[in-house]
Amino acid sequence: MKMIIAVVQDKDSHRLLNELVENNFGTTKLASTGGFLKSGNTTFMIGTEDERVEKAIQIIKQNCQSRSQLVSPVSPMGGNAESYVPYPVEIQVGGATIFVLPVENFLQF
Image (cartoon, rainbow, N blue to C red):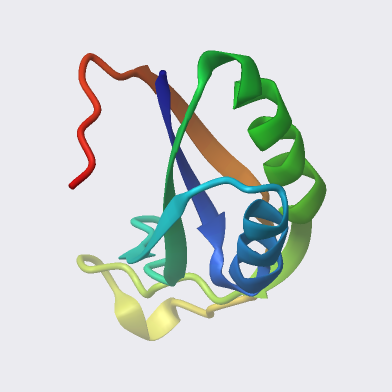
């Protein structure tokens, strides 16, 4: 048995949850916050049999696409902030970060 932890952008979470449920994956959905953009993410914890791990990863990949987004950089903490001009920067957001962990023991009451 494996535990899949998938961190996805909030925009993708509803569609992903529907697909996971449709394919009979039990999942727990948690609200989380990313460190870089400090924006909302969703973390899914999916417990599944070893032979279904690739199917779960395929579903995540199909439903969590990366996209470009413009962000304004945060002003510098030190130095001369008066000369700082915050030009928007284009970055890639979305997609998924996936961890697959072995499960030593699984109990359900």
